Length: 70
Length: 133
Image 1 (cartoon, each protein chain N blue to C red):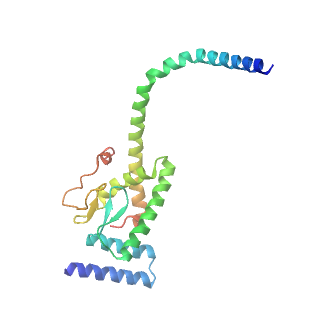
Image 2: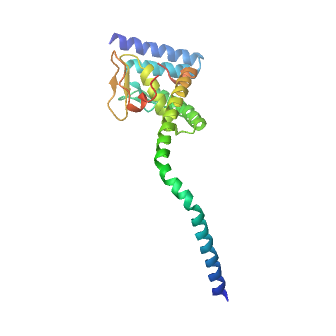
Image 3: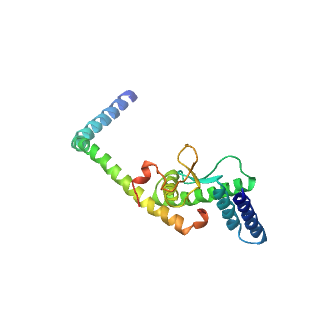
């Protein structure tokens, strides 16, 4: 019957989901302490980007003086 | 007064030269340089030129045209570096405020008032200091 088929399908999905959740259990535990580190990395990357942009900005002005008349 | 007249005359001569065949970009830059000297156009921390008060149509169109060119250059670089156009423009603004505003010329930070540069360096926004030369 159709209802039965859906029920089996659901069970299969549920058990797959549970299986994945069980397998992912270790990953979730690892991810939690990572979060503050990630934030620190972001700040560092941002500073690096700003430093790099500063050089780009200098080059831009130097190579295109007509865009920056004094 | 005299200096204003001579600056206007200077700009007029340069405009005339532009009309005689010098490149339009040169004439445009001359209009902007004259307006900067006259204190009606100045650099902004956002990386673009701004206008203080009422200016002639020539000055306005020169400023608009230059800002469009700057935006194109910022957009190009921002795409290469994977940053926003606004960030690229603002970091360039740090550079122009730090090194390309002469004493007496006007500048503006954020939505603040226009200020004339004094003898010392311009007090730059905090984010500029992150990557001080």
